[in-house]
Length: 425
Ligand code: PMP
Image (cartoon, rainbow, N blue to C red; front, side, top):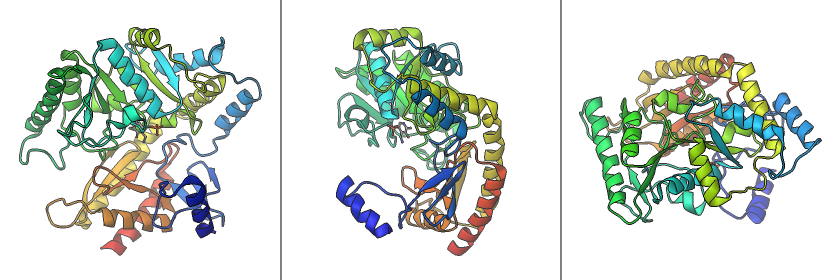
């Protein structure tokens, strides 16, 4: 069955369309945190942040069906739904976020943010980290894992992402390390300022998710934002992964301690319905609208609004921010408790229900071990727990379940994790 599906997939989707796991998984149904294969085997989803309020959430399904059965049109008509949704969304931020441009994917929303920063400043240059991913379009893809100093496109510069586990300076205090990373950021900004492109803005995932969720030297994000603004740039927070209570609070920027000018959200917003947004001050959004006349066929529709509202309602009604904080702390404590017994666990880190475990060679040099990470991910899948490996070296076990993941799921996982770790030792 799987072999036949794989052959069909190669034929109609083209060879090379990515798949998870050494033996790919065939899924037919989902409910809450659970996913099921054709034989009825149940897996606990510990990876997917899109179905944030759970697979097949009845409140979302009902909102979607009701709206699709009533009216769904593009955004060039008056409709209260999108206004209510936009008001609720901007109300979740501080007073500097007033207006929103809605789109259908993280990539689109990031692209809107880049254009907004460029319109506002009249300059083109963007600074990002050297191991990031913000999307797959030609413009946004220019930011993907751009080695420092590799100026593949004149309008982008990268700097080494800040971290304490494999720091750019060994033996430095956290404050010295923070200064060292800020100096590298400053270099990137200066390089753009000295070029015809100029400096338009700094873009950061608020928790550096694709970089591998590192512990960031304390104070870095606030000082980086300050530096970018002092240089005349706009600060863009990519909250596509960090946002929507993933960290136990609505926004990752609250956890890492800075205030962005533009906030981009995506993945969890529609619980699977394509929905993304770029939120900012009214002045930034007005400037963007005036210059671009932006229109996006499927965006800002009554359907997106109804589903987006149902998701926010559910998160608030079920107090998922609090439960994420509590269950995440419980899961992290369980991982922390196991780490010292295994030389190949280099680090446990993260926040809320977004945790990472560094798998390294037991050589005292923190050498990444992506092969062992893959073996652990495969073994967990065989025991009914779906995770993946990520980060700059693909050696970080990534735990990022739907927000409705509860303590009993965490405990069941930790028991399975014990078996997998023991088999690896
Ligand atoms: N930003 C971040 C931090 C992401 O992780 C991703 C997707 N993995 C994107 C943006 C792009 O989102 P999308 O795939 O919806 O275009």
